[in-house]
Length: 183
Ligand code: IMP
Image (spheres, rainbow, N blue to C red):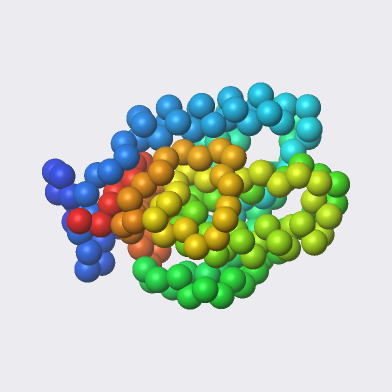
C-alpha cells in the first residue's frame, strides 16, 4: 500500500510525488501507439520483447491494441538501484525465443540515460534480429546519453523521477493508474 494519498500529492517512502500524466492521457496515447504499430508492422509477425519489471502495465495495454499475428515474450534487465542508474546492465532473465531474422519490438517503460537499451539493442543485433523497433511509454531527452531512436514514444518528459503505471520507487507506486512526478 502507498504511505499516504492526498488530494494533489502522494507520499511514497520518503518522497512526495504530484500528478503528472493522467490515466486518460495515457489511455489515449497508448491507443495511438497501438494503431501505429498495426500500420507499420501488421504483416511482419513481430516479436514483442517486454522489458520487466516497469513495462508490464504499458505492454499489457499496448499489445491489446495490436490485434495482429504476433508473439510476446519477456526479459528482465537490471541497471537501476533506487533513483540512480548504475551504468551496468545485467540480463536477469533472458528471452526464451530466437530473434534471428525477426522484426522485434522492444517494449520499455522509460528511456532515461538509454544505457539499458543501448546494451540490449547491441545484443539483439548480434543475435541476428532483422529489424528492431522500440516502444517506450516515456523518454527523458535531457538524460539521454546514447543515440537511440524511439519508434513509438508515448511522452517526452522532464528530467525528474516519475512513478506510476508500472514505474516504481523502490517497488512502490507501480499500481498507480497515472504517472506521478517527484515534487
Ligand atoms: P536507462 O538505462 O537509464 O535508460 O533506464 C532504464 C530503466 O531505469 C527504466 O526501464 C526504468 O525501469 C528505470 N528508470 C529510469 N528513470 C526512471 C524514473 O524516473 N522512474 C522509475 N524508473 C526509472
